[in-house]
Length: 431
Image 1 (cartoon, rainbow, N blue to C red):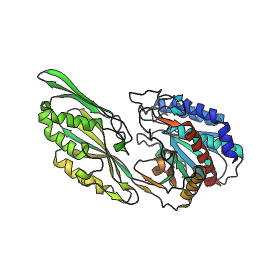
Image 2: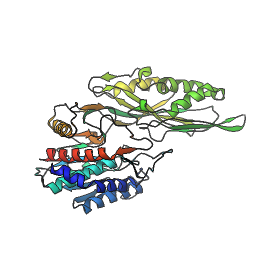
Image 3: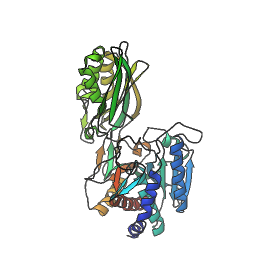
Image 4: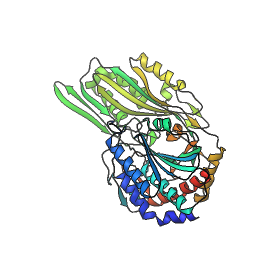
């Protein structure tokens, strides 16, 4: 098709544009006027809109919460919804986290999640425009700014902008994802009245498997420390990582220096550090549509003599939040912990034969030859923020998942495949 030829002719420019956006370390910072996600995220948003304008598209900054690159005419629009914010880089990279091409890979934080895929969508839109494909609806690329931190970017976008008629978010796996688990973030806090701790911390974000955890403490008046390293992974797939906080809890429990904390450590170890599916707490729920519950012990910190523990739970789509929370609340409140739900995203579910999902699946099958069925995942995406949106790529079957990990990368050829799929998907949805 003509759009595929145009995309291939712009290969080098596509790579250049990915590197340009990845060069911004756009981790959410302190909110400022006109910059609700902080200065660094605002900077990459302005760069993205300038890029869209240079390619001849209409652009709009929606009060700093989101950006729009748009093509076409019509009352309604089809959306490609992604984000420009990223999780922290972390330590231990062997490649440049702000962008590097090495062999057949493009490295850097955001190459897979989500700057690379959104640049692929932008170049798909360039090809749609240049091909002159007839469209009934406008096409909007919507760039959010606080997806990784559960911010209000899309909520604020929808205060002034209408819902799309259909679309996708390039922020998960191929093929189309018709079911996303409910997501909970819970804080369990306990006041430590007698202890020898000076500091304790582990984890950078609750939706990441923590790769570092450490404690500083006094023993006979002497300051000592204990630390553990793990392997980071996305919170929806904790089995792919190695949890440093879990290792720290076990390590502390084994040392006589922490005998006063033994009961607290035992509760945390049994219910959280030994468990990835909630079975020790009796919340190991499962359904046919989306599979088993997933539990990630994501952060822990000592602050003002309170030990705060943060867990991230993905629960199956046919269950309610209360099926999970009430059992956990009961267990920990009996042990002297306070229980607080910090955030909750309900499940998402569309039938596999929904018209817009079938269109996405047909485009994907034509481009890849893969006729797999739609997927269910534990990861939460922007699909939950808008109507008639599902996650669609960028990770192709059989590829290494580097989401939220050190040396995050995307294969150059996979990025080109994404651009072709997204271009043709936009045409099918918008015509």
